[in-house]
Image (cartoon, rainbow, N blue to C red; front, side):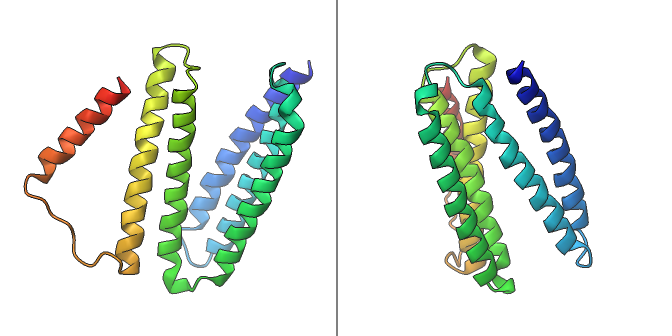
Length: 184
């Protein structure tokens, strides 16, 4: 019963969080309402993070001995990550905000790719659909990470001239085929 209630709460919270994110993004479209949009989206993220701790009620029997340590590590990671994000957000100049956003976006893509790698190497896939979704998550995460790093480097002036290779579309296509082949 407790598992069902926590799953229902998580589902409702995820729905509420999605609406808070969308509303926050809408408010961020104007300089006048952007601060309140950032606040609303931040509340949405806080609610989602807190609700994720409800997953402890549905943890498998094999994982229960590690629950306290893993929960502690999650809290420590949240404190360190949140503190670093808050500090860098306060420290960065407004003119450097696009670079910081590019790096944060890249870290989200990198995290998605890392999660997909853990799932792939853990051999816990149960069907083709789950495998395809995980592979897509890895591919999208990797593209997001690399694209965001290139965007940061261009915005920060680290990359001044674009790197052009003769037949670049062919090379990109071969890399994509190789990625699909490795995934297959």
